[in-house]
Length: 164
Image 1 (cartoon, helix red, strand yellow):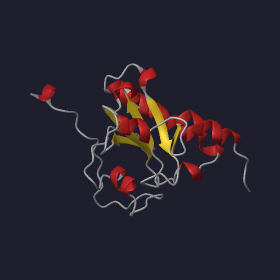
Image 2 (image 1 turned 120 degrees about the vertical axis):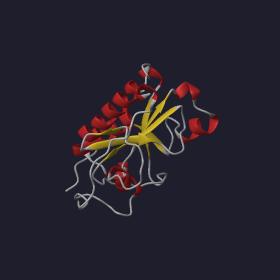
Image 3 (image 1 turned 90 degrees about the vertical axis):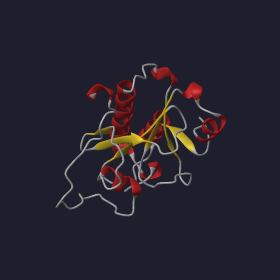
């Protein structure tokens, strides 16, 4: 029956269309948000998309990415603060749609270069943190050289001196 079926991925018509500006054909995340990989999109609002991480570090592990190619978090500046906040909001919405209501047991963060496997900006949304295994606790560890929380990144961007 229909109610027993898992939610269907968001589908968009990509036939006879050219990739949008900000698309990098070599980037796996650009290809995912362009529906070239068959990955289920849990969220797609035209600006941001969300999908499951292929190597989950927690029972709920999602990635929120801009639909336009944006470099890693080191390439961001103060103007990107609203984008980071919007990414967190999408992560919270997807968690709540997947019955995660305790947002105190959630981690939102980014791997800090050079510890990024994909150079397209992506927010890791992990829940519940209390159920993460040893390796996940290490990989997504707070106050490390390789992972920063969304709040830490926002604070860094807000204090970053303007260049140019």
